[in-house]
Image 1 (cartoon, rainbow, N blue to C red):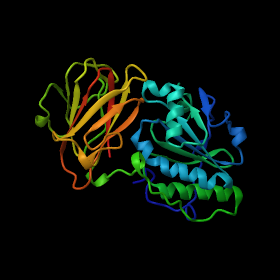
Image 2: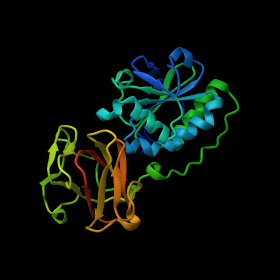
Image 3: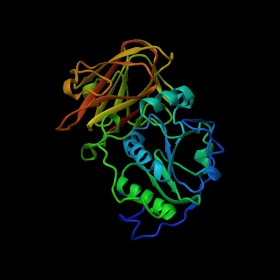
Image 4: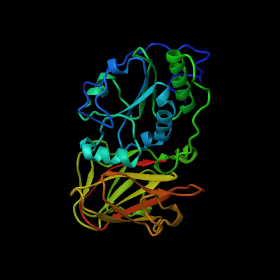
Length: 326
């Protein structure tokens, strides 16, 4: 459901003025563009998309934002992605550059490593979309996933205000796949779960038998250090178990020694995942941690039921940050 009440069409409802485009002076750098200013953007409709590259909620919006950028680029729309990092490794420019290339984020990116742009917008969410009209006034915003038709109607409405013609009523046709596939909301009963001491919830302990875990509880096996932001494996052979209910299991991972490959093995209910393997795992449950990013470890077919997930690392140095589900 939209945060802004009932579904509405811009041809029948006026859009309020919510403020002025703050600008991007706080950006620590730019990718895909030289720095952009509100003055340079005057006369164009501007969509500002706050993101961070490991966020599954943002990834599930990307296909739509990418399609809007392509369809409306020559009709007066400028899309700017503001990359505000959640985890320390997301502050590293090369990590963001590589992620943007892999994800085909080709529109301008303002790097917001110090949260300067985030604070200028008084933003609090990933993802968050702000739409500014040709006069630099913010006319619409949306937090989180969903309401893609409404978002595109707003783009069309502001483009018509600016140009008056040449903007059709057709909406983009998008069939997201991979990480971008929409969540199976009807079967999603497991929450985002952090593995660092600062935000950890439902931690059952260390060396707890996986089959005894309650739904949405997790445990560590082996020699781990639970640091403020992540759990870090000290010795090979350690693992994580999680009792979950969802189609997809994702986990943000990083190697403590950048560039070091850490092989791992995934089990579902004590067996290799087979057809339920994720993008980063084969049917035997084998995969490798290489880049610091979000890993999809399980994507199971129907029917969806409570399952026990186990992940074992064959080398030390894995940092595990947060589970997300879909």
